[in-house]
Image 1 (cartoon, rainbow, N blue to C red):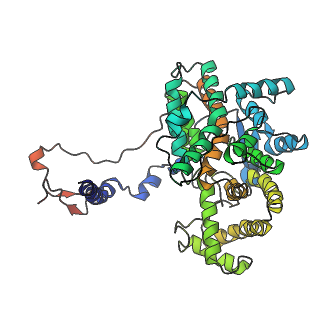
Image 2: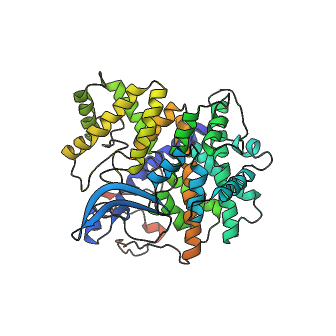
Image 3: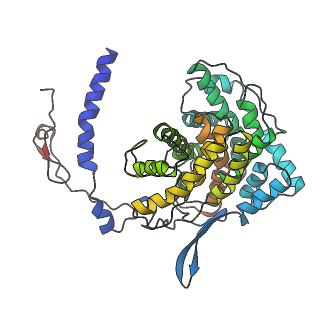
Length: 474
């Protein structure tokens, strides 16, 4: 009986998928005709201005003689250059996650007392409701840890007596709690999947409030809870670099949109997570790793530039890997000449690759970083420069840290929850209108027909193909 039901559903969806395409496909020329900026961007990749923010700044061009000229990419958190921030906590041999989280949430760098108080508060928030791990995370585990994480966030709303209170102090409390527990929800979600679906051993390690977020991730993930200082420092840098990236990226804009409707914090963050998990956004680093694995399987000598270049051409020609025509990890919606996050990250990558005896892999990544922009420029019609983005190296780093691929995007979320929280509060403080962009309707008006008349042949939306919707199996 179950097989019969599944076959019936499959037959229905296959038949009606074609009808969906016929009735929903829009002539691409109409977008230009009506001046629609698809993806809320123009042909140069510049986004439609839809808001103001004081949280971060992305710089990819400069005004020269009244013209916009591409420049080396720069990223600022609350006015501070991300390179200066990273150099600062590196020079002091400190972990930067808490300090940068404080900066993004409250607008200023903390002094020693403020940072200590902030760390203590995050530590106090680093706890889950009684039996939450058993009753929520361990139930119905999924290989998609982002789905597991989203489920956990929505379920936490059931334990909050003030779930719908959007006063700023309550929202801040909720955000601090979520920032604190995201590493637990993510790592425990993976362990549940790894045990119940992969038949591996199960172990649940509690986080230590005295440790940094990066250290706690590695502590909770590994059976022996051990890690090296360089491993924790590289992961900490990755978290800082992924923490915030302007209000226009898809998941942060989602945060703003859902916040503007007056929704609660848990629903807002769940929506942001759903956006982040997409392969065009937070899931891109997984695609990079999979692409590199495919390259090694299909290129005889990965040190031969000619062979690697040929493979890159095959990617663009939709003849290799997933046939998407993309070289993953290359290009960015805003940056053209360089992504500052990738530039910073590369120095960490090289030191970690040397420590892990994987320098040959690092050389391959460096070669592709150099060749890919040349190949794309030769093959594609592009409106701006192309360079490696932060996702190009992050997957490689996570693999060197023995972090399973299922956790790559959740680690992005562990970092980006800080930026989401800052933007949620900024939206609540400054804007009182629901975000509602316009869509131009091009539908054709139709007269209503009674049910007995609807089995007659119909034209599709283009007035071209004729098909009939039978009212019975015959």
